[in-house]
Image 1 (tube, rainbow, N blue to C red):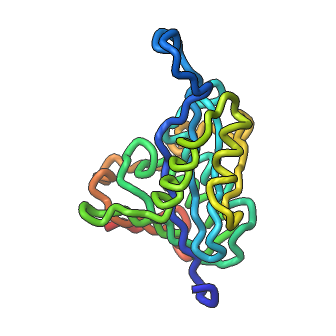
Image 2: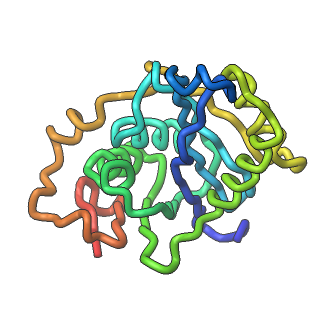
Length: 211
């Protein structure tokens, strides 16, 4: 709720989009440019922030997801001190030491009091991001994006409410979170693939609770 002390957001990586969109037979033997976008939906303002990049800039592993989530959380979108993040159970992207590291960094630097990450369970795997993806896919079928700017137009025009905002990513915004996390975190004893909930608290900096 807007008057609560907790801000809830959901995040998910959409399936790869390709440009240019061509249908002639010659394209079967050619490589198209793979484009990625990470959707981060804030429940407070009901806006969806789309981190957009392509394969020439970065991949779509744990470093990229952690870096871009850190960038969005640093944008000052939420003025609340407690954050709850919902995502799926993809270990390489959402459930790893890089994610834990950025949460510890944000809490220890005074941006938030608590950050809690909750993972969906089987049978309950629908996020608000999935609704956004459906709108974008529906709009994409009516368009023929040829360049990156066309994909921007597809995303922004997929709804008339104007709740989509594109955040263009670049190599400068992607950090080596894995190397940084290896220096300060040791989670070998934690079976993180089985974790359904983890929490970082300012009262116990550099410790995290998991269930």
